[in-house]
Amino acid sequence: MTTKVDPEELRAAASQFAPVIGFGPVWPPPTTSAGLAVTSAAAGLDQLDTGTALAETKTSLMSALATLGGRRAAWESILNESADTYEGTDVTSAKRLAGLGDLNQPLPGQPG
View 1 (cartoon, one colour):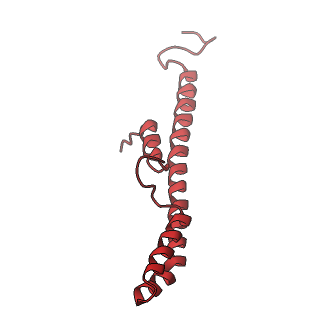
View 2 (view 1 turned 180 degrees about the horizontal axis):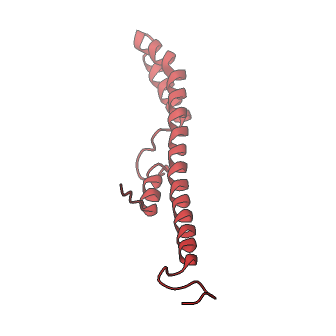
View 3 (view 1 turned 90 degrees about the vertical axis):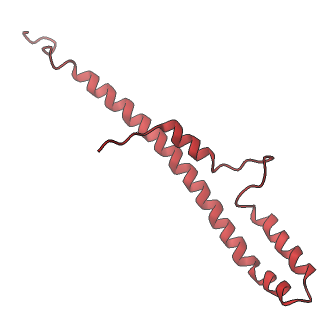
């Protein structure tokens, strides 16, 4: 089985998890802005059961968004670390193999 790894592709994938400010919505949104949005929506519907339900879901929503934010950061970190580790292992292995020399030639100091 052959596995092909491109560290630059791993880094490009990792960059997709970094928040891009100014180019559209950040996902997941910061818990503070999500909390404010839910609070505002609930306040506007305070006479309805929907307003009460929205107010009650705020804590769960904020917890879920915080979890997603943490996972996003973990995915980004894992992909970057994988790219770095692969490159380091590949370079180290190449140097070790080169150090063995040509199998068709005698070792230095050995008769040919």
